[in-house]
Image (tube, rainbow, N blue to C red; front, side, top):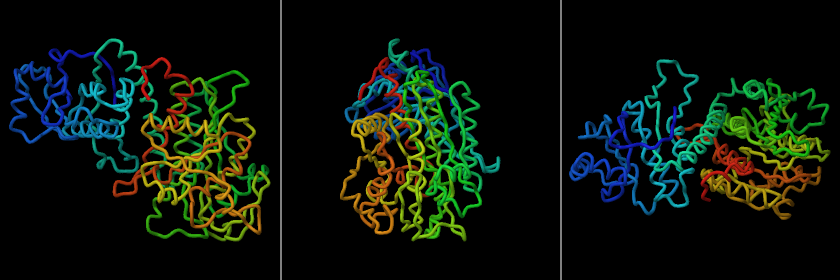
Length: 509
């Protein structure tokens, strides 16, 4: 869908549809008041006998409004003008976009951007960002594997966003550029995550990395490390997880160079890419096992973020690592009771083969030491315990470096892609004690999300590190199941902040 930003004259506007807001008790927004005056009170007269009250998400589509050149007018309820927050604004935009699309309207001019006068903690920049990002979310469909007859048409093609002053045009252009890059990255993450495991394996992930390198050849290079090289490197924990699968384990590295200075250390993202997680010998229950194709959402988000980085041409050096493999049962599978020597030389007693993500990540965390990273952030659908602790609203954040954690929390607040920080303590570390090896791969029943991060932290002590547990936020679990694309928005905002791009933009935090 195409977006544009412009200053519009309501009297002269002749688009298919104009979108304006009304508040509770049928109070008109500024644009709605202007349209009512142009139509000689027609809008108020309609509202006087219609059921729409201006509650959030209520809609009323008016056709052939007197003296209005546009074919129709969409009124969207915005609730109380003094109480609109980001969550409510998303609902308003989502409802407006779906209404237009479902009624077959191809293009519209949106005056909801004026709500930044009422939206707490917002600005023109953020209003544009959220309008575009929510619009793409509302119209996203994963229909790649359906027959053409079943593909629902998307009628809505163009949205123009109204801005009040010429000064805002520059701000809006920046916001549009940023958000279009982010939604492109989110789409990649969603499409990859929604792919079935018989198509999306570690090799498929590597092909997506190569596509990025082909598209952005001046800034991105990529290579893959297969099982032979992993053996030479001593990555036995990583290899153990995929040993029973017919699909080769493959680690894909995507290098982006936006700075040519030799001393510029890279930011590294590591994504867990278990393309199907059966649990291995510690087999998962059959119910809901189809959702274990989503155990590679961390890797998918890394691929999406690298798309954003390249699209925005950020002045950073960034490395994305997709740690791909498949966890299957079989005669070659690793077992509970096995002791594995990791790439770092530390040994791990396997107590549960369904705690496989940390075994892949621990060797990958050791591997990236060679890049002398500035910071390393791993992203993983790591623990059901994180879902129990935080539900589906917040990703878990754990870190060994407070400034990095604060950066991520700030970016999460700005982007609306929320996180909640959990602690890492010596008491939690003791839960991993083993009398057979240096550590066990699980820490018992309690604080499972924390002990999983404690395990990873033992392999990340040579650099500043953070861990995002996205088990509860990477996909929807209900009848509308599907990938959410999180935390691409959060990590993209983290990089935008690091790049200093916000210094030229009206920015409210």
